[in-house]
Image (cartoon, rainbow, N blue to C red; front, side, top):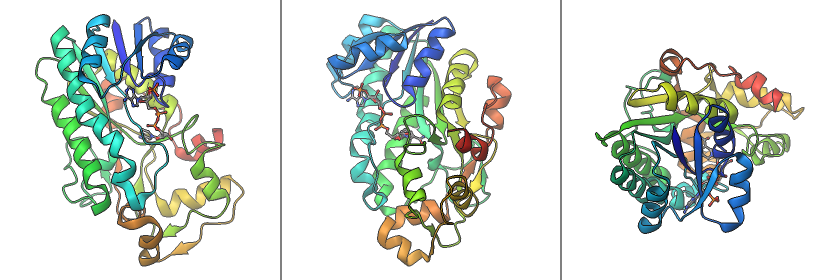
Length: 309
Ligand SMILES: NC(=O)c1ccc[n+]([C@@H]2O[C@H](COP(=O)([O-])OP(=O)(O)OC[C@H]3O[C@@H](n4cnc5c(N)ncnc54)[C@H](OP(=O)(O)O)[C@@H]3O)[C@@H](O)[C@H]2O)c1
């Protein structure tokens, strides 16, 4: 199939494009920069230069490629201070609202058969069970600092799944780790844990679902080839509370066990959003992705996956 990847040069795009090419697809990749054409080519795709926040440029790029499938992997997160979550996500939020709308309307104009878009497991309501399935409720009361960001993910999901003219698939990824992410040998978060600067807040009862970026890319290829319209959680087999994975990671890195701080202290340095993530977040189940996509993560547990990175 002819596949257009928006976000081809990103953390997930760099894993995804070569896998799509290896699976026999004809791949084009969008980048904003002329200077990244070479990178897109190295990955095996035909580069298309366009700003995803410019409606005309997106329409022209999609019309030029005339893809069967569009994959939306656009983000612009950079580094994140959870006290200012929405501020740091402002550009990503635009990519998830305006960017999604522009890609959808350009895709409709050329009749793309499938539209696959990146979302995230943080969207689940923080009530009820610890492990969420795709049909479980969306978070309608996110922490104040991340309201716009959750609303942007909701916009993306509703706009994509509302597109009845195409096979629309939303992939709710877990927390990425591995090459190019902040949870990697040279990554920012690993460094904080190593330096004893990543404390455990409250009871550390927030449950995180992780996914190695290579496994996320494999699942994305599987969704393109075998997915049905709808949502898939793309996470590993081992959701874990912060109280479990953070000391586990510290041990792997040969660091001291994380410092424990009460919620009110956590709120001072990480904001309400940070406290929510450490104490209330829910994990996700990958049962549907395994069942319908014939996909299995090569790193079923963050524990051995972190060690492997
Ligand atoms: N589920 C998760 O845990 C998750 C999800 C996403 C990101 N992250 C993390 O966030 C960190 C940084 O990610 P990131 O989002 O900053 O960067 P990134 O993943 O390295 O790349 C973002 C991609 O979006 C493209 N892009 C951004 N704005 C664009 C625009 N206006 N027009 C066209 N393309 C545009 C970029 O293209 P060009 O630069 O080539 O123009 C690039 O291909 C990483 O540590 C990553 O692991 C985590």
